[in-house]
Length: 286
Image (cartoon, rainbow, N blue to C red):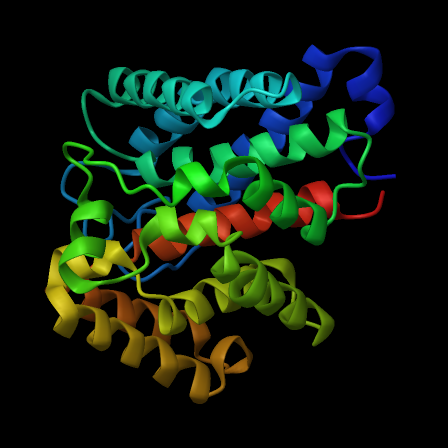
């Protein structure tokens, strides 16, 4: 039995969609409150952002819950990618209304929205929700549509992916989120297995993502040099003992100041952490 049960989805599809959406919002909240995070917003720290703080992010993520419910319900009915995309566009409008126009969670709407949809699709088809079934569902149901790169006005991720030939969120999703399932989620699980508490495990997963992934947010803010700078600092942290080091939080704050000095924000890596936390929630055995 998974946290989102087939019985619940079969008895009342709307209840199943609500349950899945709650996991998505909870995962975004877990990412938000995690601290200290270099260059990223957390309680009491704006990171490299002048236009948002933790309260802005909170308004945003709660505004997204209805969109996630709609995505789950639509996917359970077997909808195509175009419908999911239209729901995502409306979710982004709700986000901007809640934040006064600030883009707080555009990447998360895309990443988590597709994982929400894949979860609902698996449940509706009577499949166990596992990492393998989620990836196979993503690729089979929406992979072809995801490989067609659209022109989306205002999408920094798509612009950076094109400029630097980086993968970006769209290619990541089309490939079944290899950075989530192959990098960030395993890092989270490995840190837990090593005996670290949950905050430390999540910090380890985040820093592993920053060190490894071609984060288009970093490319947008700092170009290739900014990406390599951030990756290098994250690797230095991990190689120096990572979350096991006694000065962990102090070192992360120093790293954060270096990110802020260059206006670097690893928002893509934060989105991947939220996605990994979501997968962890919906695939964990109850």
